Structures are given as structure tokens and as C-alpha cells.
Image 1: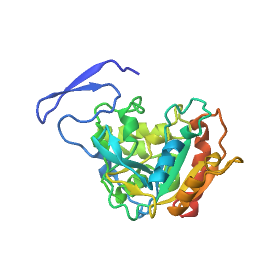
Image 2: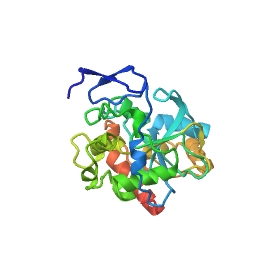
Image 3: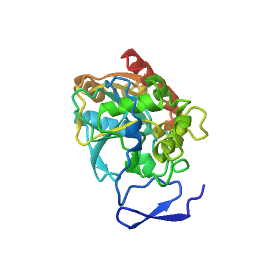
Image 4: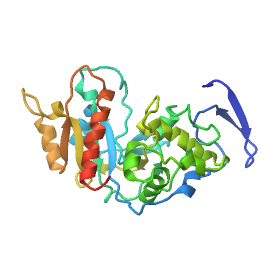
Length: 293
């Protein structure tokens, strides 16, 4: 992969030059988005998507104490947002491959129903933070900008992206793209072709798997109260239960918000990424029980 070579493109709209880095996703500085993927939308008729927010145990403790998922300033879109993925518990933990005996560093999952949240601020077909930090650079087309991938800001767009790119919710959850997609695209359809290459990083058999590469991002520009919105959580058993005394404040907070939960079995000196498969399994079981998959 070539990272250092620079390209310059003259924009036909305003005749300014925009610097490009090979294989890097950047934001537009001029012109207007193409919205390639909106044209491909193939809705499956369902818009009842549960939303998944993955954070660290330490952050979850504060969320439960405050009673809400609070917006935080996003340096990609320059405003305070709260982020979810549709259905999928994709995450990339800081220092996720490093062993630790600090429980606070390990994954905690909130699962929400969007019934009372109103329309999203935006919907994208992958993790925009990861995209802008270079997670998908090996596959990205440098002539397709971040805004070009943007979907309509509604739940019909989630349905349409799943229908077009995956064909079913189960295939989407597994990261399995439709086999006939690439053959259906003209060579000049740079946006959809770039998305397919990026999304391939989430497929089974990828040499550097990253579920964020095709997890549909749903962002809100407002706080999300736990009560009435968050229905389920996945966490380490040791966060709540311990022979030396249970975590009563957190248990009471979860009960007060009406949140059910399940556990994965944590062990010290493993890595946050070690629990990815178990968490994916537990979330799948819950979503299946609710008719989501």
C-alpha cells in the first residue's frame, strides 16, 4: 500500500485543487456529494431495527449512574453526537489487543429500541470514525469522499442498505455480502465499488477482520435516556457479581431503567478483543429472541 504519494484533482465546480492521499477516505472541501448508495437502496419492508452501542465497562458505570447515553463531541462532524450500529455489536476497543486485569477496559453493550428517539442525525454504511482514522484505507477509493457514502437519515435507509448489500438481516449480522453485487456494478460506479471493498473487511475469511467496515452507523444529536429506550445489556459477570459483594448501585440502576441483561465470563489478563466472539453470540441470541434476525 502506498501512503505517501499525493495526488491533486482540479474540481470542475469551483476550479480549486484538492489534495488526495492514495487509498484514504477524506471529507470534501468543495463540490457536493454523489450519494451513490442511496440510489442502490433495496428496502426489505422492515424498519424496526434495534440499535447497539458498545462502550467500556468504566464508561457504562457512569452512563448507568447518569441514567442516559450522553452526546459527546465528534471531531469528524464537529458536533455532539451519540452513536449506535444497527443490530451489530461491532467495536474497536482502545488497546483492544493488550492483556489487562482492569475490568473497566472491557466491553459493555447497550441494546436500544428507537421507537421514541425520533429521526437519526445521520446514517452511514460503516463506522465513520474508523474510516476517518484510516481503518479502511487499504480498500478505500481516494476519489470517493466520506459524504458520498451517506445514506438517507432514516430507518428506511437502514433497511435499503441491508437489502441491497446483504439480502437479509442474518447475512448483514454475519457480514456476508451478496455474491452477485460486484458483477452487477458498472466500472464507473466508483462509490458502490469502494464500499464493497471496504465492507469485505467484515467478511468471514478476511485477513484483517473488522466488523465496523459494514456495520450501519446511526447517530443522534441528542442524549438517549436509558429508561424506555435501552432494553438489554451484555457485560462481564464480574461487573455485577463478586463473592466479596455484588455491585448493588449498578444493579439498582439497571433495574430502575427497566434493562434486562446477560453476562460473558471475564478473566483477567485477557484482551478486550478476546470476548468479541462471545459478545456477538449473546447479542445474536437476544436479537433472534425478539424477531430481529
